[in-house]
Length: 261
Length: 129
Image 1 (cartoon, each protein chain N blue to C red):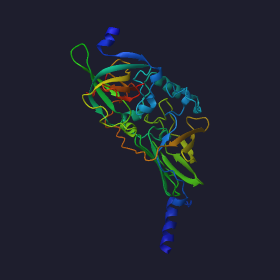
Image 2 (image 1 turned 180 degrees about the vertical axis):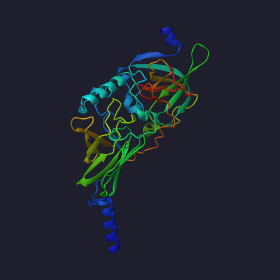
Image 3 (image 1 turned 180 degrees about the horizontal axis):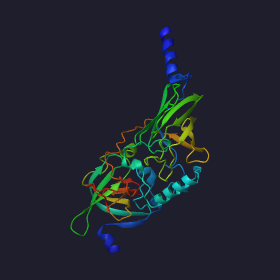
Image 4 (image 1 turned 135 degrees about the vertical axis):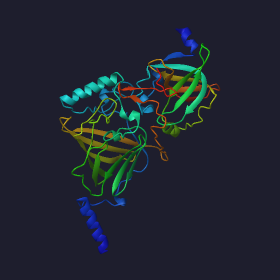
């Protein structure tokens, strides 16, 4: 018994704080497979074509400052010319946060006392949210999905995400309308089951470099039929739509591997 | 113009009712290379159905008046999504005669986004009506 107490104390000290870990039988049931509601666009008001501006929904235009609004407008212009490159089209890089919650194809949400995994078939993409009481590193470096730690407030998972590279390296966007954030972006998110068939995540995104105020975005996920299977997403298996990184144009390759004209 | 279309066994239709949800079906890329305001029909023989990620491709040999058939590349959804809807690698048997409706490439190249198909026996796949 003394050994167990000592180990628990050691674990607590290692993680830097002593937040209680919620036991498995007290956690909400997020089992099953889920699919995002709506199109893969954060800012529907500026999307054109099917599923775009004409689709009823919440306008989620980020509160950019003048400098980043100009970047956004430039990206929108490139989009309209079919020249805004989507890096995931070339396969190999994660969608990152917050695009992690803006993907087509099924999701699974694996809830454990020490950690929650967001598993997206598309990509595939994985996001880890530590709920074992650990803190963010003081010297966290920037990655696509960043570092997330959280805790449970009743049936709501509350987590913060830091260490995001944003558009700094030109290989991470939020959606194909041209939405980007900077490497100063960070977020506080609240995720919960709002009905037996709906899970919702509300992300409050702050970015001292790009935004004038916090940007609140809500994404919902609807439960898929019981027994739905997920599969490999081998993006590089037969990618016949690479992006020409010089022009931003999405190519269509013929059976011989050469671009069709 | 009509003569040219006949040569390639193509009929241009107006889209409205057949508008296809590109974002859902071509999630891996934007689909901006295809003209979603047009739907055309091509008739030919199935060469191959590439049931692979990130998108399936139906290869169809379409006769033309210049002697040899032209190979068309028709892009559809991911095998994962289609598999969940009941489609399989055997959905398009090699050698089958088939008429396919597609959103063509904006450039006019021999490719398009798959909308639906009809076999000789009347069986249909995808969006046909």
